[in-house]
Every structure is written in C-alpha cells, then in structure tokens.
Length: 412
Image (cartoon, rainbow, N blue to C red):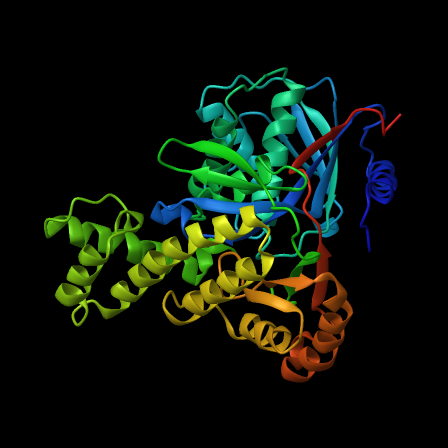
C-alpha cells in the first residue's frame, strides 16, 4: 500500500474496519506524525537540550466507543495479527509479549491503570501508518496516539501535556522493556507546522522556533535502508545508555558533582576527565566526547536556524553524524552506506543516521532542487552496495507538520 494523504488513509481505514467487523462509523481519526531530530540525537537520556520537527509520515487511527469494556484493534500494517482484543485490566504481564505490535495497546492499558486512570469505555479501532520502521519514531507515534485515543473515549482530559510524554515513555520503558528517552515523544507531541521545537530539560520548557527569513528552500529526507530494527531493547542503544549511566556513576564516585553527561560543559572539566580516565575508560570517554561536542554544536545550530542559515544547520547535522559514527559508535553499515551515497550529491547540506542506531533510516537536509539527484543516486548506488535490500529501501521527502491532528467528521 502507498498511502500518503488523509483521504486515502480514511478510505483504507473504512475498508479495513468493514473487513474485520469493527464499527468506526461516525468516530474520530487521530493522526500522529513522525519526527526528525536536529539535535542532540541520543541527548535526551544524557540530559541535553533537544531540537527537532514533526515530519509528514503518519499513523492514522480511527476509533469509536463500542459500549463495552473491551478494546478491539486492527492494524493494516500487521494484518496477520488479526483483531487484537482485550478487556481493560486483563493484559499480559510486562515484557512478556515480544513479537507482536499488540504489546503497545497492552502497554498503554497497563501504564494508564498503574498511574490511576479509571478506564471503562472500550473502543473499536483501526489504524495504518507509513512511518519507516526505525529512525523516525514509529513506536513513539503509536504510543502517543493510543494513549490520547483511549483517554478520549474514557472522557479523561489531560492538561499537562508533558504527563502524556511521561506515560508514553513508561509504555516503552516499563511494559515493553525498551530503554528509550523522551526525545521522540516530545518532538512528535509538540510539533507545529513550519516550526522547530526546542526542549530544555532543566525546566521542562517547550519553545517554538521559526526558521529565519531568507532560508534556502530545502527538504527533509528520510533514507529508509530497508533493514528491520528489532527494537531498542535488542540494540546497541541499550548498551550505549548503560555505558553513559555507568560513566556518570564512576565520575560521581570520583568527586564530580554531575547527574548526567550533559553537565560536562566547560573545557577544563572535560580535559580533566579525559586526562583521568582516557586510558582506563577510553570507550566511555568517547561517548562523553560526542555529547560534549554535540552540545557545543547545538547552540550554533539553533542560532543558525533562527538566522535562516540552513547551510550551517546542515553542516552541523553532518558533524553530528560523524560524531555518532566515530565517537558514540551507534550507527550501522547500511545507514552509513546511505550517508556516503547522498554526501556525494551536490545540494545535500548534511546527512547522518537517525534514531536508535544499528538499522532503520538515515536522514539528510537537501536543497529542494537537488531532490531528484538524491533519488537517482540512491536508486543507482544503494542496491549495488546493499543487494539484500534492493527491493526494500525507500527515500521519503518530508515537510514539517503538526505532530497531532484530530478529525471529527471524516468517518460519517
């Protein structure tokens, strides 16, 4: 299926509902976006500020109360799973469902009830998404969509939007067993069309930053490698997060008054740590180095965005990618093949891996008039370099969009 717009998505959702005996007539559609992080990738669990945008690859979810306490869902992306059905309060124990998308709605029920939300109104639900698997935050988009939809059918209003972020993270951390931070959830939930979202963890503030006047016309491009990323819980991401946590503990035990690697911001402290631990803990010092340098680049990138200097934003995006590859060591061969290919194309301003690493998607900032050249270069070189994925890769040309939209009148 090649669903790219709301009207085609609605037609598909209606078809899937009819085929699977689910009643969504007159119901609601919630559309949740993907995201594109401009900085700092892997910074959320290290305590850095974050900046990114929502992008137009979506999950569309049509839902309607069904007059019972049962939730019935069907995913057009995983039709072999059939209709997933459960009663509130009766879902498998955490981290026992490994290979089914159903672990997400199960996890939402588990976390919402654990946090004291009274759920009694069930729903029929059909969903479909075109977000690539890995790199553009499909799991966060799904978790947020499910939480907001279940709260809606149960008449529960949530004024504190950051509480939604906390709940979505808990679904992945505590129920699924994925050690994700909050970057993805924040960048999707708060995304606004045409704006960048700046998050400061010190006061949990959200600020919207318009791109400065006179910026070169550019596109955000997702470079889906065609690989399947099995989840953060099975990836190098988990190892990197544990390394960073362990290094913070080691530094604390040696008299450093820090709670995260993000707090190492001055050159004197950084050099002191390198001198003290550079030989005995070389790998951990490399992880710290990426975070240290990425934070310095972050403020340059934010200033460049405000000034409309998208060329500088792209340059920093590329430098972050080199740091992720060489210092944080979280990329993967297919991701780097994509980066190597598009880096050779005139008009590509910057490129790097996206998301949790290992597999999934890379991304690029590309001048609008170079998009066709990027597509041609990938179509020519990627299948030759990665023949196993010759019929699975994709190039997604994206624009900046709202993270969440609700449609009340499209299922009449």
